[in-house]
Image (cartoon, rainbow, N blue to C red; front, side):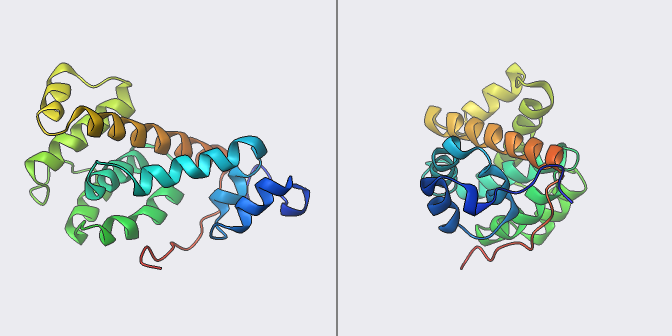
Length: 177
């Protein structure tokens, strides 16, 4: 049971209700719709992060899963993004390594390990070390690096909303649907 009620579509302003009706019936959307005026811009923002970046989708999803593992009570994020990660190329071995917090596992490429170390530092310390920052700069363009930090920030925020509201788990969506 959530600590806050889900938004009641009947009580939402028309634009927020229309936006809620247009997305899958997931708890995250119903919870975020409580922020009536921010809901539509937040949906657009999430759509950009999931579909319109220069950052490689596999790197994006590895970062999201790392954020989920580093955030206590972020099961919702993990459950929803494992199928997405697999759909963009993550192997079962990579998902298992992330689940056991083994970011140095051999199943990851050097670039992926660099991204995971960077993500860990940004989440845990709010600032990547000079060494991690320089290593990621060798791999990503300035655009991709800023996009990565936007993804990390977005999913840190969502994980905190989900954890604090005790969002009910939904079955994961099929990313191919």
